[in-house]
Amino acid sequence: MKIRSKVLATATAVGISATVGLLGGTAQAADPTKAPGGNFDLGVWQLQEPVGSPGSPTTISSSRLQGADGFQDSYFYTDTRDGAMTFWAPEKGVTTPNSNYARSELREMNRSGSAADWSLSGSHKMSATLRVVSVTSNVCVGQIHLGSGGSSTKPLIELYYHSNGDIVAGVENSPAGGQTTHTVGHVAIGKTWTYTIAVSAGASIDVTVNGSVTHYPIASGFKAYKQYFKAGSYNQSSSDSTTKGARVAFYGLTVAHS
Image (cartoon, rainbow, N blue to C red):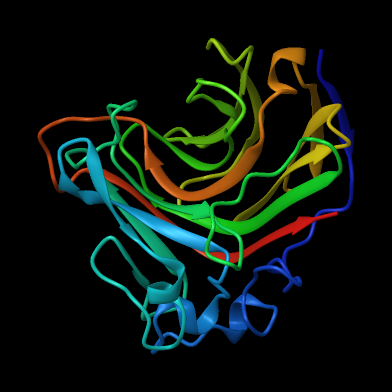
């Protein structure tokens, strides 16, 4: 069962946190002449791109992403018009072994360089300000993914943006698979919006889109698993086209754990 409530929406970008954020705290502070690592604190992320060898996409380490002269290319770059951290995932690209879809996506890491792998107990939150520039079908722009604790490679939740403007939360029914979808918002293509994906004391997933909050219970089968956040452009359609795909621009991104 889902429970919907309203909270105050904000039109500003997500502020900086102690873990990761937009340097300077607002979208307007972004410098379009710098690589994403010069505007965003990428010290707790690594990047996966839709290139590499079959079944083994290229991964860019956090150390390479950081700084004004950090890594960028045609799949991950600063938009020179507004400083947005931009992700491009074409319909044709290298995928992971467990997916048919290409992605240009950040994966949460610890500052030590090890992979983030946190327990559902406690409070965990990822917030973003973004806009979907283009998409052919739909794109996952944020997720909580299962980490260690078992053999499942499923997400706990994925947040999708559809080409008709619908924003949809896909909540996994169990580690074995099966996803239930819930429409949680609607924003026209190219318009800026905000989301928060959070876990509260291991009991529920809390999804906020433009100030509207929806809560979903966490199935007991997930309690054995650790988790981590992902954000970017995880395209949800495939073809032989390298020009069609999903382009997503981020103006703010934070994660926090307590």
